[in-house]
Length: 275
Ligand code: CTP
Ligand code: MG
Image (cartoon, rainbow, N blue to C red):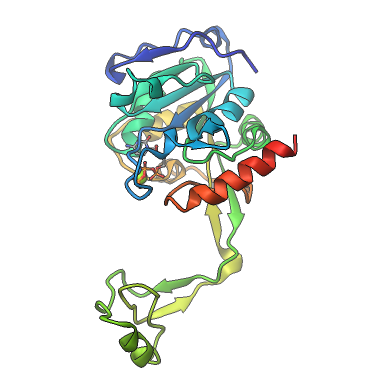
């Protein structure tokens, strides 16, 4: 909606004044916390700054957020703020994140003006979410739904294991082949096997995505304490509020491991050529 205001970096989120972008004077505004302060342990590097299909992952994620929202707070690793990584053109303001995802959400919320009535939280590790998805999430919150989560059906057959502990390290392929016909289902390819699992009814499963959207005061209450969660809706649910699922986008994948970048880049190129 609005042009990105002059971007302002804030070194210390504790000192982060409320963003003074023009959107802060607007009543009933929509803001997005764009989370990019993770360390990419499983990916092997700071995936948010990886370049895919001609732009950084964070810039791919920020663009549709800025198109659909009045303001975007990009939450970055503190060490990145003073470097070239710290410039996120589509963001209204950048702040330093915390050790955990939840602390990063809190840092983002602290920089959002009190006038915001709808707040979205989006993982910058999802560079393929479209502006249309943001707009559908926003429209659903505006229609009076307190917490909105995009989700897609699960296509894999899923087995739930009886316990997280595996039954031991399998030394070589012969022992997998030799012992895999025992009761339960054993042998996940790799270095360990699991005995005891059952198929979960796939029709009842949904994989949740971001951007998730909330009535602003509800999200602020959910993060008022020091609870930790990987999922914002989970914290809101603890307040006794219902979570409403809407249709997500199958292409809206999250970069987790480095192999994911190959698929993400192919999808980004395909989306670019469609325009
Ligand atoms: N995130 C964040 N602050 C943290 C941890 C995570 O802002 N302290 C953000 C990540 O940058 C990412 C999103 O939350 O956009 C989802 O997290 P995840 O995919 O787990 O990314 P990382 O934490 O960076 O990866 P890993 O868990 O493999 O280290
Ligand atoms: Mg993580």
